[in-house]
Length: 215
Ligand SMILES: C[S@@+](CC[C@H](N)C(=O)[O-])C[C@H]1O[C@@H](n2cnc3c(N)ncnc32)[C@H](O)[C@@H]1O
Image 1: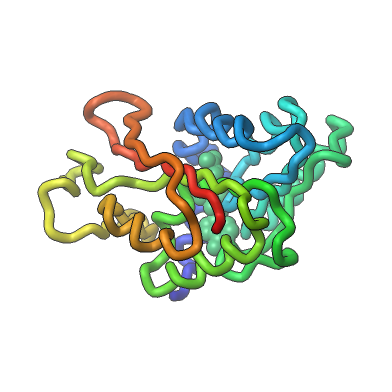
Image 2: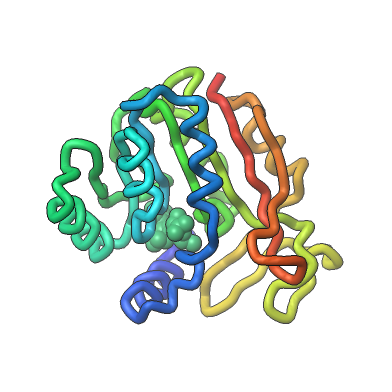
C-alpha cells in the first residue's frame, strides 16, 4: 500500500505540535519489557516518533534504537542524543518497519506503541516476518494496538460496527479483534501476556497490550 498521505499527516502533526498520541501514557507501561531483559540489552522501538521511550530506556540502563520513517524526527532525535551525551546507548535510525534496514537476530527486545494499527492488512505478513527476523530467539516484543472493543472513536462506534477500519485525515486506523491478533502472531511468537487498557478513561479508545516472546 502507498503510505505517502499518511506519512505527510504524521510529519505535519510533529511539525505543528498536534501529535496528540505522543501524550498517551503508554511508554511507562512499555517499561514492563525491561522486567524480562537484563540491563544493557538492546531494544528496537518501531515508529519511535519523538523517541520518548528511548530516553526512558537509557535512564533504566538499556541500549535502544528508534526506527522512524520521518527523517526530520531522526535528525532532531540524534541531535538530542548528542546533546545529552548518550550516543553510546541510543540512536534514531531512519527506515521502514516493513523493510527494517537492520540485521537478523540483532535485538533482545522490540517495542511497537501505536504503529501496527496504521499498517494496511495486506502488509501484516511483512510486518510479522520483519519483526520476527530482527528479534533474537526468546527475545520479547511489547505491542500496543487499537482494540475492536473500543466503544467510540471520533463519531464512530467500533465495538458496534461490523467493519474494523477507519480513515481520518487520510490516516488509516485498524481496530483489532483479539483473535485476529492471536492468529497473526502465534506462528512466530508465544503470547506471554494479553490485556486491554484504557489509558484516559471510559470514553476513550481501548488498546490491546501484548507481550510476545519469539519462538
Ligand atoms: C502513532 S505514532 C506513535 C509514535 C510513538 N511510538 C509514540 O508512542 O509516541 C506512529 C509513528 O510511526 C511512524 N511510522 C509510520 N509508518 C512507519 C513505518 N512504516 N516505518 C517506520 N515508522 C513509521 C510515524 O511517523 C509515527 O511517528
